[in-house]
Length: 355
Length: 230
Image (cartoon, rainbow over all chains, first blue to last red; front, side, top):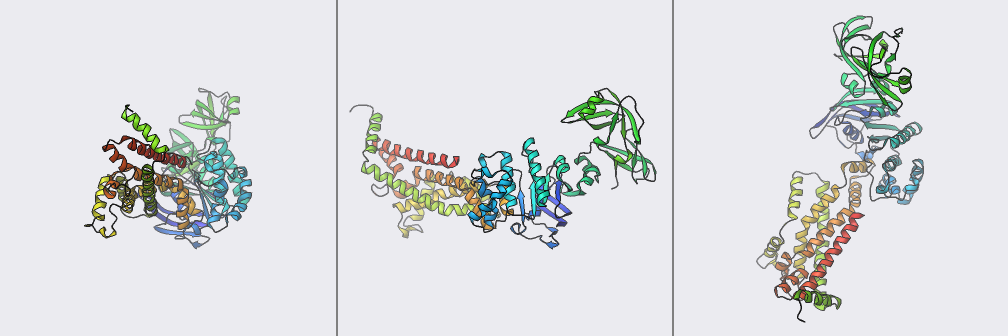
């Protein structure tokens, strides 16, 4: 639907360098990256608010690189809601229709069903300053949807909301994506939001696109160590391949030997990425398992976080596992407990230093 | 009455105000007329210019805004002197015969508060942040519609700056003294009348006019806080 073909642009001292990506119709596309990486600039470039100095932007195979924002049929929602403080809620929501030439009464009538859908109909005559953050965000979203955009652009829409409101708003966004089939592009620095919402995603670091693809693939099999760190792989171990037999490699990393699936040749430097929930812990010296990596260790710490617990185990190298709190209770895990730790060879994602 | 002249002055001042003393009323009306007219014309010129500075990017924009902010504190006697030279018979605008007329005072006060109104307009419009501007554009507004929306959304802040401009105009004495000449029945306004009557030890009239001037300033402040609260 929208395609960036080697797009570069400069904004002051900041640069976006040769960004190429494709956002398909109906995608829930996440642009993630650390602060200052250029995520918002990229989002605003999709909206037409910055003109690339080189490269092309295509919409449905038509070049729109220089098309002004008002002709792109996109709507933008910022994290601070950007509502008009001196307009009532209903006038805020109908603003986009008014500037497109619709009469005031007609525009107001048009957006009433939208207000009802977002549960803000009772706030229609209120001013934004009198609303809560969650209510303002829903007004802002309704205003964006009112213009029936082809693409909805969201700039960290959840970051200013409290956790309960965030959950409700995630539900709103899911419904918008599923029921309306809307193409949504969301900027975020939250891996959790990406896990919950994204179908595809791009990772931007320092103005460069460093990974792009299906959300599950980027999140679980990142292309580089930087991406692995950013997408929150809990265990990243640098090591060297010591043997490889038909893609079944042995790797020395962090003072231990691991078995993993990779084409990397002996002598090659690699990083092993192990998700915390791919590590299985057992007590009572139970070492019988089909997992290729089994090692004895001692629990260093147990930190409970909601329904799960993060357990750090020293097995020569310190690894982090995530278990349910129930498992932690059943296994009586506390600091000092002796455990056996198992990881399947296929659960280890190998990043080759040369990639 | 042999009491304290200040206390007597206050009592007499109240009497002059309550009895609508013709001289006090005439001076008050002229003050309001000159300063309100000057504020109107200054707003007519300064608001669009301020908006232009805000909306258009050009080389030296920052310097222009800094200069305007510096001119907030421009001494009124300097403006009076420059305008006197321009409007006097030897000046380029002498043919307009505006010196020692309310018209000349209006022109001078207009010149005095234009930088203030321009600078405050730029500040008022800057209250609409970048994200809001981008949101307006992305919602489909043309450049003109974006500008209109930003101005409408900033209207209370802009109104505050106009009220501040009026406050500066009505309370200043330098330009109206030099350009108007403080001529009785012709160019005498609240501030110049207070200066003259005080020098003549005519305290009651001075105090009466001072109370009125304070009441006007208070009125402006109340209006300002009402607007800002909005």
